[in-house]
Length: 244
Image (cartoon, rainbow, N blue to C red; front, side, top):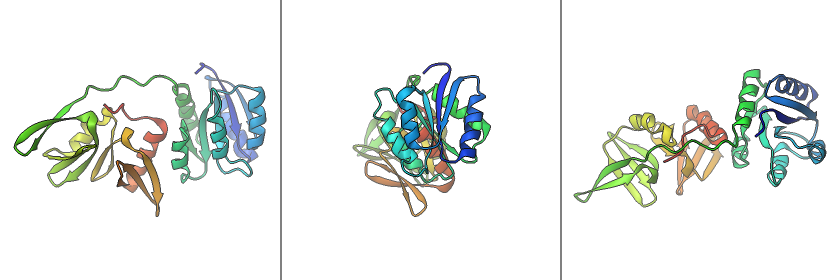
């Protein structure tokens, strides 16, 4: 990613489009900003200019922001995509389209600055994974050692936790709160008072009856309301650790 970005802003509402383009254009790391009012106009602009990032309104007539993002994903070198919307119900679809960021209107200048920072860091390789750990578990009088990298999620079970792997589950006397603190750098995130999940093993993120649910190995795990935003932030922005 270049040090100075060429940015395309796409929004069918002139005031929002102009304000966002103005905020982006004020940043030192931005070389140029072009603003258009529709998905079709964006495609025309993309034919003649190479952009490093596209800030996309989602709800637009004709070609929506999600539709345009799917087109951009087919480019040989697709630009980084930042979605801009007044609602957060599109976060699941944005996650599936590998969006770099997801801004909620009204957009604040600090969030625009953070989104541009994430665009600049988008293709920087992730840091090396943390050292793998082994956890001793008792099974039929025999002590086995389970690698942390093999654990897909952890479930609270009274004074114990159940470590779920692809091969089964193991009950051990550990604190979910301590694991949440100690394993954060390894890609584990607390999504509920009962669940700690390895983010890289999430295969689906669903919205159901205003509830957020993640799917891991066929298990549907509910995300508490107060932790939903943290989860979406990690999935959209990659702010969690490496998952060793």
